[in-house]
Length: 285
Image (cartoon, rainbow, N blue to C red; front, side):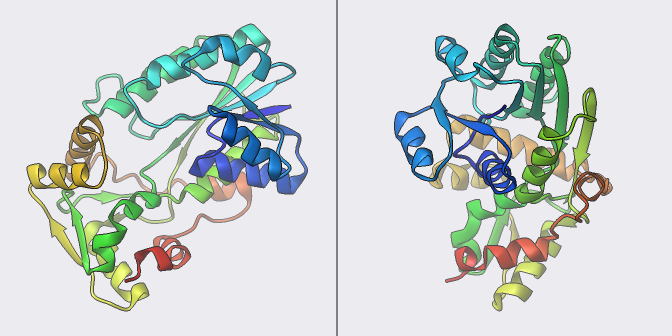
């Protein structure tokens, strides 16, 4: 039996959908009872469990042999995921498939990049079988700026830096494949899209697909930080994103396409045009 954390999120939710469509037995892990009830109405076996309350995890992990581990980037991420790994070991879970990050590094100034590296080290040392998926930046991050894009502007702070953007739908496809196969223990997979794009090219693609001009605005860092705060991000998140895009400017995210997604799933990854078409309504006026 597979336990899927983050079951109401973008990647975890898509993993649940793929496993359900394939008829694969799994259990969805939710933090809130109303989420459990909502998934149950869709015919999904769901259970409440909170990584901040380790005592809730033992029952949720009963009968589980494989776990999909993902949490959002927060200041509690290291504590939450290490608690989940330790609880899984206590419960007899034999393998964890973890979403990490391509820029994971214990010396990184990007808080979630450092967090992922620390958690990855903990998982490898835990004695549990593991597979680590390290995607690059998500195309879905452009949805943070859907309102200005609809008005003809792409505000960023990335200079001319390029990123091998990846669609979260493809990350979920890889996760679903790895969760249901036995040949991936001890493997680390770097997941990229099929191309690298800078913000100027991203704006050009948005313009072409949406049918209206989208201009890339390379903002000063303080102004970008303020925009992130105005769009609902915490100060911690906004600061981390400013630092991360400084990494983009430095070229640390310009990773050559790895083609791992096609190798692992038999289908090529979505390109940026596919992503825009899929979300066209959200980017439109």
